[in-house]
Length: 221
Image (cartoon, rainbow, N blue to C red):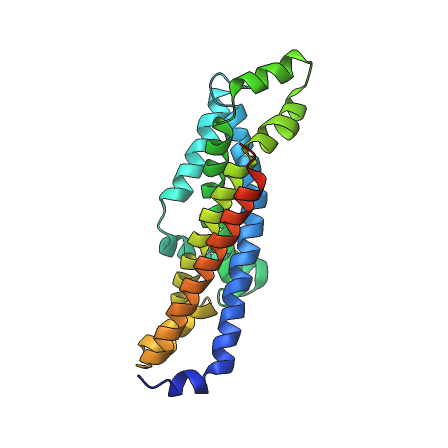
């Protein structure tokens, strides 16, 4: 296979790679920022936990399930009016980030809830016996004890975001997905399609490797 198109498109491929990293990095940051409080609310309001509240638990859980149930390509369409109102455009990486956050923050919330549910109840009860209040238990027991699981969940989310960012490229979201669709598929540039695919695979491999190393460094069990 000749790579003449890749050579000609080299600056554009480099720029598309940076756009993908930008979309994944920023959306992962805000998804984590939103997902951790969602996970904390879900776990402490669940039956038998620190502050059981069946109504709040069901309401937050239902909202999380709704966003997780909507296919990402449909979620992009839902967020178009919002992105137009907030940033004045429904195209480009910044517009795509909004739909990426909407799709991944509820997912992070469920993963955080799941990681915190693995914390030994004996540790929580011991903290309560020593007079720790709810915030102290959340900040000094639940979050530290479940950190390896949370990091592992964030890594899974990051890998998923790489795929979502490529899908966003189909609707002018930019990045490697957009290049693969516009130049690789629609313009019959098979070499460009191959290279953009390989770059997406490398980003996934690198992300998973970094996440695994962080989990191994933090997990002392």
